[in-house]
Image 1 (cartoon, one colour):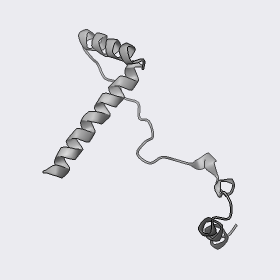
Image 2 (spheres, one colour; image 1 turned 180 degrees about the vertical axis):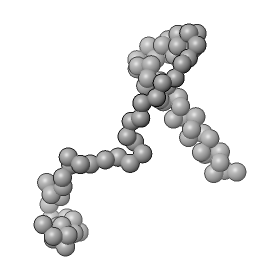
Image 3 (cartoon, one colour; image 1 turned 45 degrees about the horizontal axis):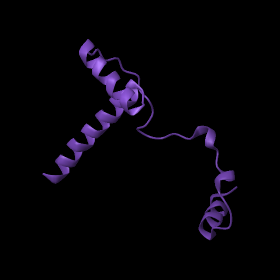
Image 4 (tube, helix red, strand yellow; image 1 turned 45 degrees about the vertical axis):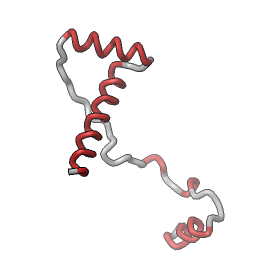
Length: 81
């Protein structure tokens, strides 16, 4: 299909365009996982596990969530200054 045809289908809202897309090569920029290793003191791992269990998520999920929250706070602060 030529780009003009695709654009017309999209612009005219004639039909769902998903069938025309090759989703096998789809990527989410800056969201690809990158494995890292971090050493935490035992007391910190215990506290992370307690909090993760309390809210019903994995240790990894709680670490990612808390880090994302902190990064967003830092970014928000930079914009506000």
